[in-house]
Image (tube, rainbow, N blue to C red; front, side, top):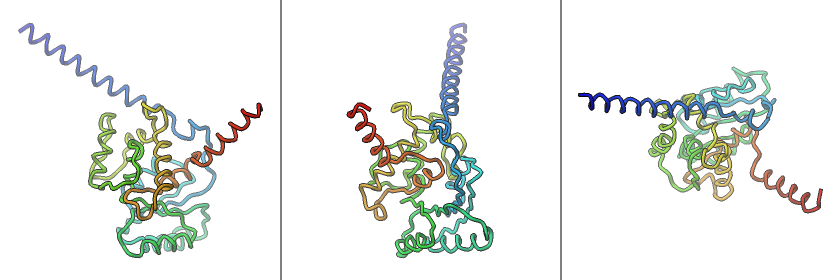
Length: 255
């Protein structure tokens, strides 16, 4: 009986130790600085309107930024891109009549309608910016964890790929398609292996995919990183290379 009790006590201690370690790991992630604090970037002064086709995933993600200069509208048409543009026109005419925005973004998943290309051109002609994803916005989240190159990836595998990385950290992405605060904090945390911000790695990967592939026909692609950069300014790959080249030239010149 004494041996059984000692064994049970030991198992209980091990369970508590695992629980404490998991809590410490989660707390560390949450304490890591968000983008504007880490990079010393002030909140962007420009006023942005985001019009989302999705009613859960995209809005719940962008709402976590909690910036007063960002307005968010859930349209949820579930139809074609052209229909989303019509909804945006209606919002500007009625809800936001007379209000000025520096940028208006349409966020949606690429549809299979034949008018997709024409719809993109129409949106741009109306001074809308587009942040579409193929096949879905979850691909943007995946790039925070995987160095993917734009090849075919079924959307049915998205949730499993995301949960593989966030479940051990105490977060879950389920059928509600809502981005929880815990999930968002992980997206904004550092990669412990590279010591780089996950969002910076995702941004660089998304940029590379756009640069290397004909993105509107690519199997896996996202433009959400461009909207992210507009909300939270990041140094683009091109700008980073230019800065590094300039710094290298100064060193060679002995400046």
